[in-house]
Length: 485
Image (tube, rainbow, N blue to C red):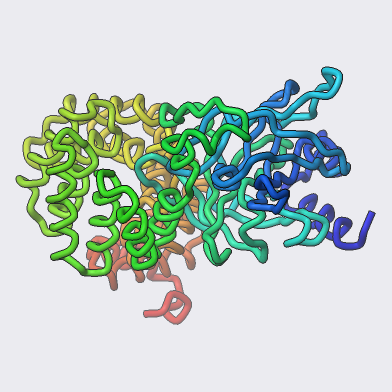
């Protein structure tokens, strides 16, 4: 074992596997067998592409990046143990991520080691093990956290990650502390921006059938075009907030595919975010002319309307969007929020948020809004807490979510977990007056009077004058310099 691998094992053990029954060495040894490098070649045996990948089943079904097959006549994979196998065919492609499902030739029906997808997706700040390309990282392994989370149509929930590895690590699997596959890496062309796809993409409805031997793909131009990664790279750049780069990439794509309405929609979205409003409107107009039945254009129009406080226009566009695609979860959730603001119909809003969750179980916003409804209009604290916990797991940056959960613990007189949540709420938003005030009461009930008076003082300064009444009543014997008055 090399020093670099030993250090990685030690780090991963410390961060994630304390008390876990399976050792980190076992996890690495087991999962590493399922990882490979994929290389594609043209008819002159010149390499045309290289990426990472992994097996999904014992019979040779595997995942890698589709773009390496676009100009190839043959392809092989090489496992971490050094064994090489031929890629029989590309079965399907997920155009929005450029993930490709391939079939690898079995020799004498020998089975392959493979990765089991996790039942739960990754979470923010979770430390993961990435089997990155050996040419780009020490021993082909990297430890790193999920720095932030994103959500975008066609990709659902994604993770933003960092690391000193580049384009050949696209297709690398991310492994959690149970040794399960919980994400798939993709990188921008320059390797500066990295996205982690969730494994739910493996089962979504956006896969396109290819089902051709590698050497025959070149004969079917319409299928070959699906393997190009300009489209998926544009979406990656949008999620990573590289809007100008995304617009440039989409412009190149549109030159080759002027009939692709979704490309115009995406460019409109990118242009809007760097204030090219004229170009954005023009793109949406073209998108509608090409395909008036496309749902995405109406959703983006609604998002732009909401940003400009044009709620009535947003409702119209969201309704049209849902007429085109009835199960589009972000539109369902957004429309539910706008309608509730207008009519305060709790039951209808609750049912709509539930419908959004049923359409996409990774939509944190829908759990968050349903939790807020339950908090205000339901006595079922356990169901409320379940929605809040799911929200925090999926997106802990939803406004005030820790303060909401802390309030539930507080109402149950569980003061220690309440204080931990109020701590998190204040860390995320130092002006969260409710967290300051309620943490003060929790501290006082635990006998921590100095901390309580400090919290109430902060709440008072933020405009909660009830806090000064508490100070007057309960802080007479606490030295003022202790809590800052």
